[in-house]
Every structure is written in C-alpha cells, then in structure tokens.
Length: 304
Image 1 (cartoon, helix red, strand yellow):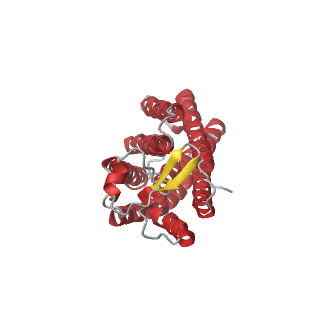
Image 2: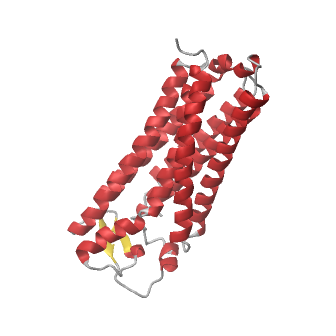
Image 3: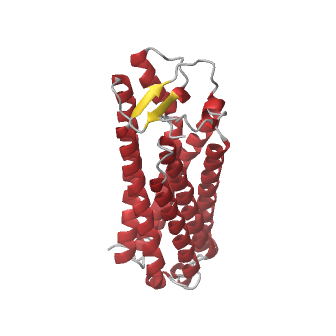
C-alpha cells in the first residue's frame, strides 16, 4: 500500500533530488559561460547573473522548507498538511526565472530581424502576464493554510501556466521560423542553422512539457505536489536552456568554419543581410565587443 505522504512529500523529495541535479548542471554552465565569454555585453551577463541567483535562492528555500517540515516539525502531522513560508517563496523565484528566460529569448528573436517588433513584443507581454499571474498565485497561497485548499487558487495558477505555455510555444516557433528563413545558398550555413533549429526545438520541448504538465496536474491533482515537481523543474529547464544556447556558440562556429575553412572569422561577423539571408563579413579588424554593440550584427550561433 502506498504511503499517504507519497503524493505530497514523496513527490517533494523526488523534486529535491531532480532539481538538485539540474541546478548543479546549471551552475557548471554559468561558470563556463563567464570563463569562456568574459566580453559579452551587460544585458547577457546580467541575465545570466539574475537567472543563476533566482534559481539558487529557490533551491535554498526549498531545502529550508523541507527542514522545517521534517526536522523542526518532526512528529507534528498537522504541520505536514500546511504551507510554510519558504515553500511559498520558492514559487516567487521560479516565476522570476521564467520571466528572465522569456525576456532573453524575446530579445534574441528581435535581434534576428529588428524591423519586425510584433513577435518580441507579444512574447514580452506574455512574459509580463505570466509573472503577474505568478505573483498573484503566491499572494493567493498566503491566503490559504493547507494543501487541500490549493483548489481555491486555481484561477491564478491556470492563468500563469497558460501564459507560460503560450510564451514557450511562441518562442520556439519564432526561433525556428527566423532561423529557417535565414537560410541562403551556402551549405555550411545551412549546417549551422539546422543545428540551431534543433537546439531551439530541444529547448522548447522541455519547457513546454513542464508548463503543460504543471497546468494539467494542478487541475486534476490540486491537493498534491505533482504540479510543483514540474513548476520547479521548469525553472531549471529555463536556466539550462538559456545557458546552453550561450555556451554552444563556439561549437556552432566550429561547424561553420569546418566547411568554409574560415576558422579565424569572428562569430560576430555572421549577420542577417535582410530577413532571408545570412552573410559573412570577413573583416578581421572588428572586435567582438564592437560587433555586439552594433545592432546590424546577430550572434546567431549563441542567440546573443
């Protein structure tokens, strides 16, 4: 017979185990990012610092919540049915992670084609709405005491999950569309773009699955922690997918140079010539910092 705690604290410990692994991977990626790319612009560095900070605080609060439940509250069975403050705060920082990641990808989509601002603006609106609904969800959580009352917060939770899912779908479709429409007649360029399209799909699948399962499980199992598993893992998926796109730029650059024998061309020289072409500016005297500041240049292999 399954333990009556399996749907709550059983899932709690599974979540703690899985998110710790993903958080460790994310920390490694953050360290590698700052080691490999110290010359990136302030926006990218700030985004990496914030998303790492938010996920660190979320992990710390989740651990504190478990300690309060099972160590300080040992033997207090009624306490196991209540929300404590740290576990409510975990949600705040997870929603902030979602917001930072979606804003980052909105900027990436904008830089692929600055003339078209509609899609990035829609993504920003969805990201802001998702964050607002998430904060509303946290406020609603402070107005209830036990897990069995979670159903009362269903409106804000549903809005947050739907907006997160819509944002992820739009980001994934927009990235694939922008990359696919940038293909020209150079085979090696196709190779890079196909790799980036695959990366965009992989990024989107994980975050979309987590958002969808969060929505479904909260609707059908609102008195359990099944939904929380996907909320918290979703934050780690955002962190790792964002850092992965930043850290794989050298690999994609190597794919480009392997066929063209232009390994010494800076990655920042790959740019969108009009929304339908990628060209290479072979000028060797342009620094990466200058290219990053020039809106005409698109770091297509890193989504910077």
